[in-house]
Length: 116
Image (cartoon, rainbow, N blue to C red):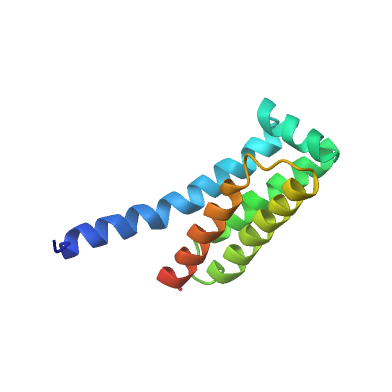
């Protein structure tokens, strides 16, 4: 079954907007201190200040994805935060949420390949 060029264009437009917005949202959830995120970072044994700074870095990297000029560094920042989260999860034996950063890294890598 062939996919129409219009569908491809719409999909890419949605993907181009969704990934940065989702990254900003995920970062800001850490900044404002949503209960689940606070509990997760406390399980990691890190301070609330670390959580807030981590969220700001994540949201800032995602914000950079909107700019063609800063796309690559933004993707690298976002991937670095997800790798750090993955490492903290493994270090602390929190394996039930490991697929989340893995999927995020894959989506960001695809984003870089498609839009750079």
